[in-house]
Amino acid sequence: MLTLKNGGTITEELKKYDAAKMTYAYKITDISTSHTITHAGVEEKVPVFPVDNYAASLEVESKSGATVVSWKTGYYRAYMNNNPPAEMNEETANKAVTAVLKEGLANLKSLAEK
Image (cartoon, rainbow, N blue to C red; front, top):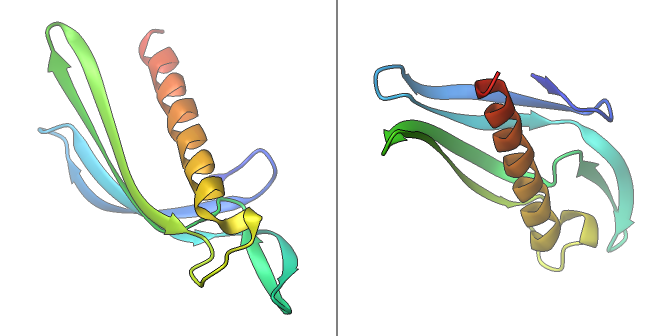
């Protein structure tokens, strides 16, 4: 389980791991709620990470004396019905995932350079 700076949590499940190939895959199984909103007359829970059905894989490989990390993701926006609220639309999901990938890769780089 990941605990975010804001106190939210994300639970992940390891799906595949191959030490020899330096790869692993995981999926998110649970995301805590940030807050609730009223959208189209219904109370909706807004997750701390605005995605649904998120799965990802990481691969580490050596190329020309450098280490290359590939982090691939697949996901849907958090609101699966038509006309999503801004808190759970494609743009918000894409921005959140991009931020996680950039921060995660930057952190990985800093750890590897120590």
